[in-house]
Length: 320
Image 1 (cartoon, rainbow, N blue to C red):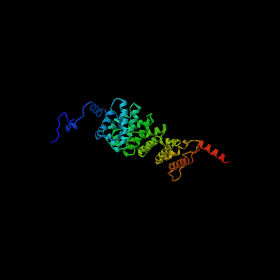
Image 2: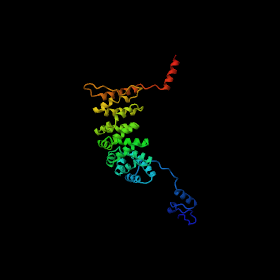
Image 3: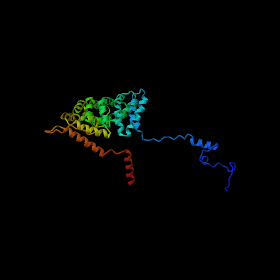
Image 4: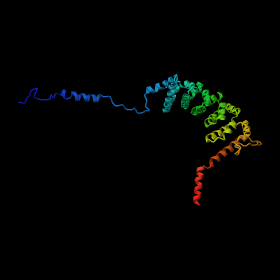
């Protein structure tokens, strides 16, 4: 017969429900609190992955915030928009479909300088897609951009010219710029403060016959010849290209011959007068070729730097 014992003699209860059950007591309570305590704060890492719901809601939210009265809200919204538009080309199309170009056109003339700068930056990004250019042409953005070429901020003017250059890649864009009087305005900008951006934007207008005629009426050749004395290489390059477009008509070639006195007196004339010969119709082109040769020689034989000249002089003394 087997051994048997009572309830008080066999020790700890070894039934399964007690072995696998929850612990009790002070130690069990401390372990339970340790398991369920609040975890330490971890800074979230930046990620470019966003939800589909955000992608569908973001363009409309951006457009809505641009109608806010606070300039600070507009500044932050435009800054976020620029970052978001750079992440994927589809975002630009979605933003155009959210009717953002309409409010951006109004913000180009905002009294706040930072709002104008960031607005033109966003427009320059939207102009990289066809839908953006179509919306700008339909919404009257081109005349507002032409007015913004006189903005005191250099960054704003740069973004304005980038947008106009993208618009000017299409025939419809060139016509919109010319019809808005952009040719005369660009020539006036080149006369006051010439820059590579303004010359490159003017080049788009010169591709249109009406724009070329407006440029000649605004004395654009004199402005381009004056730009040849600029020290910046890009200004010289674009000025020479514009002279090529301007000297195509016969009336322009005759005007080029009369502009020889605009060159610097201390240097050889860049555009010397060329007497017309019988059957000669390329006087303006020869003047342009001569200016280009002078520019090429200047690049091939730059003036010596004082510091390098001093080093060469010392080395020659040591060799003696």
